[in-house]
Length: 197
Image (cartoon, rainbow, N blue to C red; front, side, top):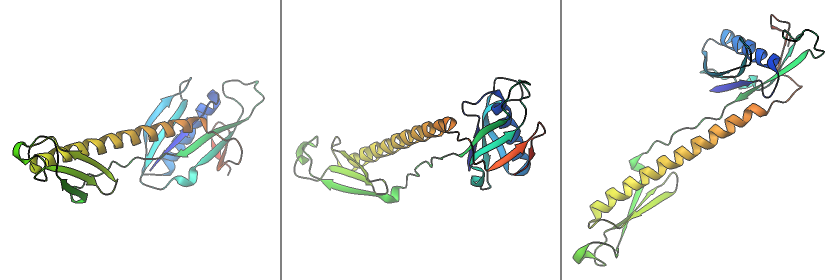
């Protein structure tokens, strides 16, 4: 599973909280690793971190509160900084299983010489799990049309996977702006980032 820790549109203090919380998660969960990170405005700060783990970290989803005087702006009145933890949606690539393809034949009016409209040379291939189908009547034989239909079907499934992946990546990116302040799942205090809840 993957979780994203994000400062949202928060200031540099939130970016520091992202780095500190990412360090806590890596230390607390032995199978958690940083998959990617996006640097913040200052050294030691991160706008966002993507953490991958074999363990279920979904209980961390929500906002994390850091109570601390700003280490960057000593006279700043605000002492509560919030970051967001989101479980990332993942995309499973479709495993193309040729056992799940149904082939139907029909008479075609395309190429075929003496076979036109007499022999079932046209082929429709349907991938049953997705309900996607394609037709080929370009070849002169049923065998050739079956090959062409199968090739087109695999291309359609690959394109569908690519579209699905782009949608999920976009939805995951939108998580950066989803930060909700209040009702924190965890609370930390001070520069040492000590957990109090």
